[in-house]
Length: 515
Image (tube, rainbow, N blue to C red; front, side, top):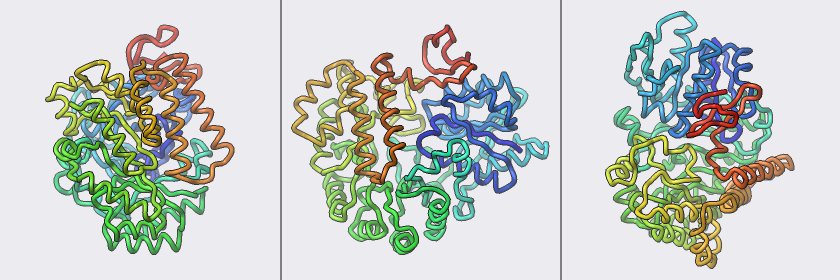
């Protein structure tokens, strides 16, 4: 059976969730292809391939785009449309939308395989666990199945379909891997508490791939593509000592490449940091979130002190490990001065790249309920964009302060790098949002990412493509004024375009509908 996954932005980060599903489908004889949305004749491609199933992985902020795209494709082709990902998991009611045949909640590998197997045999699939299925105007709401306990039995992610879509992906030197699933923590801004409500306590129990399985996958990728820097994208890199000891020995002997991973400050004990450094860890992503430890503990549900964060930074730095720190600006009920304090704290910790994000109250999270109950968010999820680098969807006591926080976000990392600039930055944030601030943010991000956090040798083509992308974004923002407007359009040559948002597209095409 032919299955097509349409992935917006597939030119960027690897869509590991869909790649895992695709690998399992292929292992059982199904034919799978990936399709991006940038500069593609979607109708022609779908007509040529003829998929029986089209799948979409959807984050909140993307749903309007994908729903409009799916309605358009449904006018030209017959297929079963399946929506998965975080938005479908926490808003399965989207199955009621026109053109949606099923939504998948939670882990999708086994549900997708059972769906395709049944379709291939001409059997009914309305009772497949994890799926909410619409047929004949009736929706069947099935419970979720048990979590996959043995991750080693899953085939590695399907990288070949991504390479087939664009052979340049094979040549990109940094590639992503997963070591585990599940998380025992309940941070207020994260999806994990909602997943635990869906699956019960089993979700909070960490499921680890064996060190041998992880290293074997990396060896295979290195043998079939360019690989100079490894990125571990799991929520938290395993901190279990026995696993780390085995991994450090295997990885150093058989792979020997620098790697990046996600960690928590309160896990960065001296023995754990030493094992990570011994294996080859060169950089980490670590959440600071805000400088107010009371707010961090009571509202964000991260019970760690500023002293614990400083100690973790010191241990990592002593081992030569650089830090990309996650920070959230525009938190519910906070002021501009609170965000300035967070900036100062990052500077004091010597963070190599203090990444700032504007808080998005994603559905299903505790921070969304907190914001809604406090009157900072009206519950309109269409205000949430899939990118947290542009605007805040929250209400502020003073509208001008919201603008200042959004501007501070763009200048946050530069000011933390050179704290002497802070008095100037405090004046600049009073200006209207503009393309110059956005460009400063993007260029500094690219510089720090490629030289500090993921340092690997770039080819001339990598450099040219990066500069072209930055220049294109700058020109669009400078001449069209609205970065969101430009990112919401998917052009299909000769076929029109699809956009979310208000107002018509050029040529009078209604918003949310294809030409």
